[in-house]
Image (cartoon, rainbow, N blue to C red):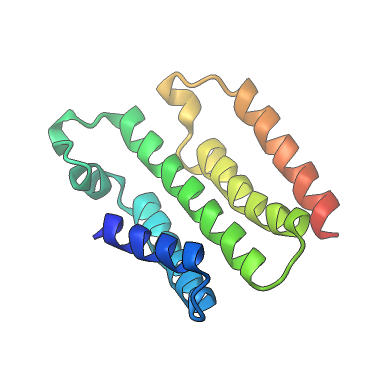
Length: 137
């Protein structure tokens, strides 16, 4: 199903079809739903990728969850570009999802208990905050 959606979207973009903006909105919506599902239900997402749930550990669940945030980040970027925002502003909007991911990692999921180094994540969150602040404001 995903491959079919991607191929149809690519065809619409490459051919300059009259309905390309509608297709891109649908594509961004599809990615938004997939990102939310991956954040909310990482074990089921792993099953969707063919990984049995008994093989998925706590760190794997967190990685699937984090990947969901990045899928959502792409959806926000695409939605923002479709709405006509300049690329820098659209990028700033997408960084807000990254900040939500960092908040989840630090305070909700507490990835430090999984042995994940926090310094790179703190640096990434700080950069995302600066990018969002300077491009949106």
